[in-house]
Length: 356
Image (cartoon, rainbow, N blue to C red; front, side):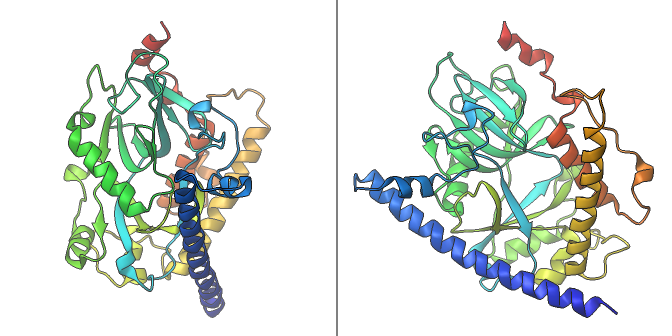
């Protein structure tokens, strides 16, 4: 009996999301123009500089800071609540199951930082600035998904590449840049003494090519032998700058939601959970349950006196209602691992040689 209220609420949220997209795109375009003027030597006051470099200021490592001392952080998606008016302005990116992180190179080494900005590992890599003499001033920052099972970083986006800052560039340019760099250095996809972890560039699908997009949605498993497993789909607005934090210019859907939101068929093996009836209701209920469960375990961890910095909090399966779906548990578990850390993210033995 309350379904109409859910739909009305979802409609309002969607309208607000569209409005925020338009305003954010306009703001980003202004910032790009200001940045161009600054690079040309045009007078640009301090407030403009601050606007163009307004990243979350949470100090955790100088490796994550730009030239202005502001800190880079991960770009986070929002639910794609309805089909965008101009779907051709968007790019589709498959997202594998794993843990979001920033990979940063500086001073001749490569480091991995979690969503909360904590360093979890460091090693040598063939990324610019990631394998050289101490004091090397070349830096690279990549937005990745790390798969522990494959010991591989799947690259979603780039903030900086070889000292070239890309956060103010449009998404379609950042993706073009990344693709060209990976084409130039195929060794990044291999693991060896010079490149301890493999880096793989994720494919992109332009919605202007509807045939390629439809083919991607029909592919199952998406990767051979279902390794890695597909977690869901990310939708990037072509003209969007990289936003540190949550942004409506990057959308997210599980594969089973695509037909309801976009009106595009997916492979029949992408089966929705039993409690799935309406996508907007599912999104709201998913977020509510996730928030409740996260708060419950944050409270639990706060009262634990024996927990140290790297300790894993074990989630009691009985604390999750039997109606909660597996996807929700998985997302909660990944978020917990990112925020708290786990044993597998102690420095690897092969990486401790850098301390010698």
